[in-house]
Image 1 (tube, rainbow over the protein chains, first blue to last red):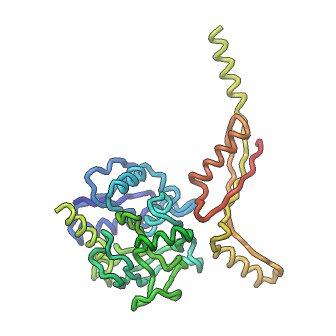
Image 2 (image 1 turned 30 degrees about the horizontal axis):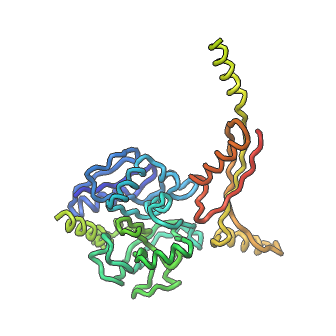
Image 3 (image 1 turned 90 degrees about the vertical axis):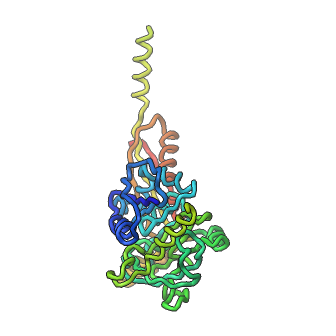
Length: 233
Length: 100
């Protein structure tokens, strides 16, 4: 199995992601420069967090037109696993691989703190090791995490189980108070209809080792590894 | 004769390129909440400005481009808006184009 972590100009969580995959989970992986277009041999691609292209125009709007993105769209449409974390999620939205858009946080602040998210769908390749309703404590760090989508698409998301994570209280209640950024329906992460593309605002790579106080995030990468293993035998 | 024709047509094409100036206005859709606009409205009100009905924040983009005619320039700017400058899930846009 081979993992790739894309480096856009302004990515800053790329090293953390590759560290978790290689050093913590013992997988084979490398960085993918944003100008590369050949993704042959990769099983999972991470679009990491950061501030690609300075967040100019809109978050993710410029990165979406990097040469690597056309190949990632093809890779995803062929069933390849793609996870976008924070800025990576924003890029997935701009690219159209995931529906909706990000607005500024309702309190207009950059929010950097641990939050609780509830696993709404544990049937995706990224959540297979989670229990349904399991609460994960994972940090967020963003200015634009206020997820928006039109009503019709929201209905589709619900119907297809595409809402994967929701901000919640410590005991798993999805409340207004537990919503840090104003995201519609407390949405913290969604997948595409097929489930092979996941976007999430919280940073699992920042809490995948006990030495960093918590390792709740590890289960997301482990789920993907398990899923790939079961597929490839 | 042939050479003269080529030169003439090249000359025409160059003369035909007109510089246009586009002013593009991007606003957050009415159906989407605008927390920035709300905060600015609140600030204005606390400064004593009265009678404010609504404040909406947006973006203003100015660009210059060379095209054969105004219709071509409009089509080009419209394409730029749809492909990059505007996210039509949350934003609306309009633009004015005139010869620079």
